[in-house]
Length: 259
Image 1 (cartoon, rainbow, N blue to C red):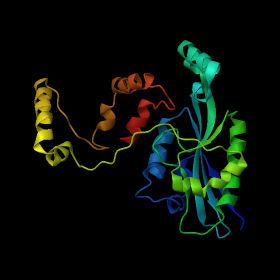
Image 2: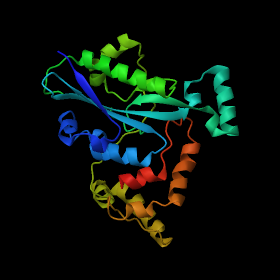
Image 3: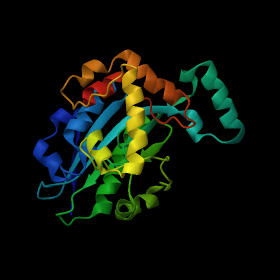
Image 4: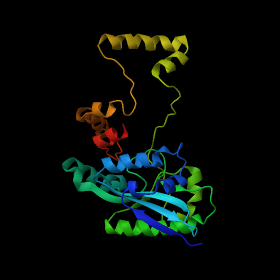
């Protein structure tokens, strides 16, 4: 079977039906066009490509979002090179930022942006070979120091195992904390607790209220973007600067676009 592919420089140029045919729209929210658009619009320092692969019947069988992103070079350094990289970072952050080509987004959300259609039988390995050519060519154009496919679960790793024969090495992703939201509000969560655990929390809430502070829950489109000021963004940056590992630095506009 022969496959063709088409490259787009904006997610808005991609046929929505073709894109959605390769993803689970309800579950794979970080591959949805809305999320990809928010990243594309807000992270102007990166370049993006979106690729749609089609079979002989012109059916979309695989989609991929690629980006060129500058990372902290110390992430790829060891020993003396790591010490030098961290010294240079203190002098001037831009000195050690290196471009890499990513199959995925410069936002670590624990989900891959290489989506493979599951309701159509096709030669996945053949399409991956085409994708490798696209990525290698693009990486050379931007003088990228590495090509990275991220972030895959165990089942996905098994399905794309053939890329290891193309020279890629499998590595663990950076540590990540994930939690599944089980409650619609904090009050609902509080009501679910036993009295012994609920009482100290209620006492803390009363102290909190005496200071004049209050908690307001809002959803996107309800003024959150306007509340996310540059001063609020500085709180995020302050935490990030203390982190031992800094893969990505998200601009304020990203959070506003998400809202």
